[in-house]
Length: 290
Length: 313
Image (cartoon, rainbow over all chains, first blue to last red; front, side, top):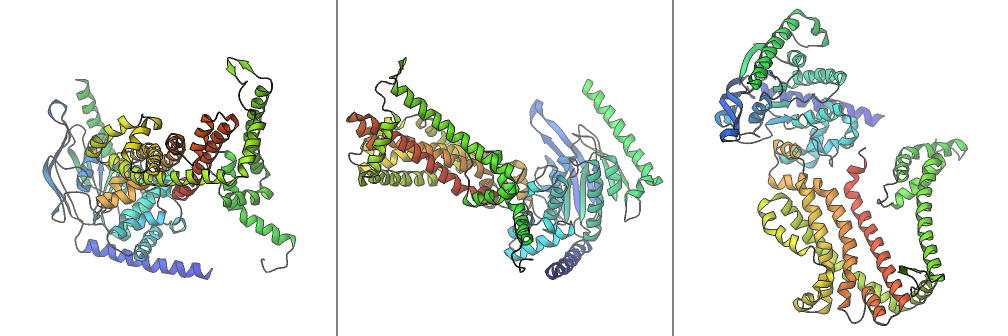
């Protein structure tokens, strides 16, 4: 009992420290993403396929940006070029002025598929990043507990990923990315595989963490509700070739709860997204028929 | 509650606390992954579960009683076939009966020489197998992760792998300085190929998303290899280790044809030459039995490496 109370209070202090660290990151104006005239072409010759076409995008430090678009429109490719998994065929991607040349811990990534190491416990999965960054084992573990506390999974620290539900695994994935104190958090349809109920809970949970942590977020989704609910700003991408066709701010005050789904602004913005996506899908459909 | 004198309630409490550990393990055993070895700890938890889950224990006992009965039926058929001098396409007239084999076996068990045969063979297997483990895992990992290494090494593996152990005897004698080293070389070759191939297969199958995740957490090539590729390949590697152990025993007889003195393979070969039929069967069954036991030992030894897998369901 007593040990539990001590544990809890220690976790609270640690979590406050982590939040402070996160705030410091954004207040220093870190997490500034610039995408300059980026094109990504896969394949060559007749098989060449332009996934992203001369795209221009700037994300402000601390901004929550959603990239919305139909499947196969290149939104994940654009995100992967920021993550460093994809080299742009032309143009440049930079974070805080430094050109992206490959993956790195300052750009935390949360994947759509479950991507925890099945052979590491939940705690060791989260501690992995800090350990790679040169922290001692005990420091890395205490950082892991800080972030597990933030996503509410301290109790499962010593479990293996396969023992957790899909939603819990994704929360561990978020904790793992945050444990490196990234200036940008990149999320590639992280809740796509979850059921509707869990997805709602995860969205609220994510907003709470982000409001505390204040890091820049680039969130890819094809779900209109998700984009409008989460974002400060939504950009809509068209399919084949992927281009940004709309870019607007979501001026709904925070903290947001599911109550805002009946808000007028919310409904208007949702309609705007749907209209854009529908006309784009129709265009793409006609193009395919030619 | 623990401090209270031993009354029925305390006992019930102790059993109840044992339940969460004992019960799932017992279930595992009962569900009968036939190839999985049973650890002593598991045997204990099966017993603990006995009080709570008679069903699980029943299933466990049932599976084993079926296995033993199946073996007994086989022996009975063998006894019957030799007793009636069965000769219809397959000829049992000159086959020693189980009773004769058992008598021969009991006689050998009482002689020191028999144990020397076994000990010498086990030593050869141990050295040959361990060398194969070291080289096999190393080569397998390299082949699995590097196209150049695969292109250089795999032609050799493809050509050498189908060659039976017996065919190696002359070259093994020519290549190696002592008889002993040629025998070990042959058991080594037997274990090597399954270990290389299984390890390479496991290393090739590393999920790409895990490698990307490790990269985005800041891992370099060496760290990815150590934290992602090797653990991902472990289930495959351990399967290769168990198969390799079996094949090592499989090749033993060929190796020990070279030897002029000791070894259970030599014992069997010598019985061929002396036309001592019961001893031939004793030797065969010893190789089978020791092979099974050592494969079981390998499974048991590698099992803790896969504890993360057992927990997933």
